[in-house]
Amino acid sequence: MLENDVEKYLKKHGIKEGDLNEMAIRAFTIYKKIKLIHERNPNDLTIKQNVEKNGKDVIDLISRELKDKVNSPSLRKKAAEAFTKKRKGSLKQLKKSEKAVGELEQCRIRLREDRKQKVASGEIKAPVKKSRVTKVKESLVRILKLMPSEDQQVIDQSEQLLRKCATELFRINGLNKVHTVIKELQVVGDKKSPKQPEKVTKAA
Image (tube, rainbow, N blue to C red; front, side):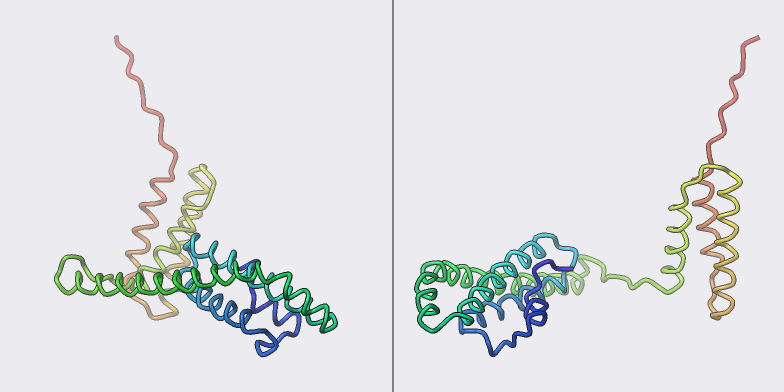
């Protein structure tokens, strides 16, 4: 979730895009493009930071515009003049943001095309889509791995419960290959089992 979400800010204050001035509209348009890139790459921290910074700048710009609107025309004019220098700096930042958005999008396109060519030439393998059975197996195995107990009895009971769960799930959904899930649960259960102390043989 974004802390500086411009769209939520506008909705909260009942502001329509048509209420904004030309610079604010342009800033808002750039923000939406950067936000879209973030939504496509939610785990990229750098992109998220860019969205947050850009969103904060846009909200600041819009809030100043709103502050101007509640004042009289003459005060609004004075305020506009006072912010001229600052807005020039904002305009430069907007141009940089526009350029950054274009570069990011072009980079993504080049990476996709490069990957397609490598797959076609056999340099790399095409990504294999995981089967439903594999996804279920990984989920159940993950649950067993998360269990904190080192007690052998608890580990065995947890493994048995998950094996029963897998068997029933596969049965009622008409799925096959439950044995692969059970086998993997057994392997993980064995790894979690506490190691038995080695017996020391005393010399006669």
